[in-house]
Image (cartoon, rainbow, N blue to C red; front, side):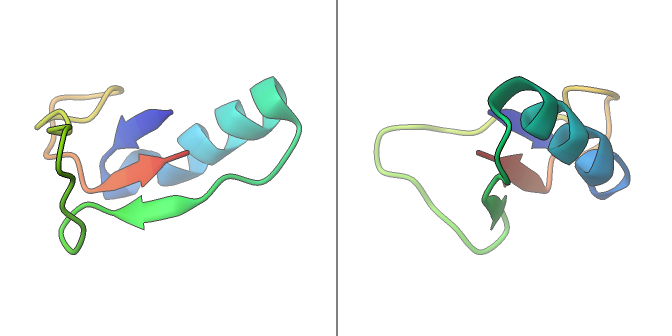
Length: 55
């Protein structure tokens, strides 16, 4: 699972595919809310605002 900004979506997809050998789901964090989990505010690769969850 990766939480990233728009600029790092492609990198996160590549990492996911390398690790799990299948295509990930991409969740837009602006339009999705979770009951028991708050996503990180910043991208894992930089300190920009996190926009997408790659799972």
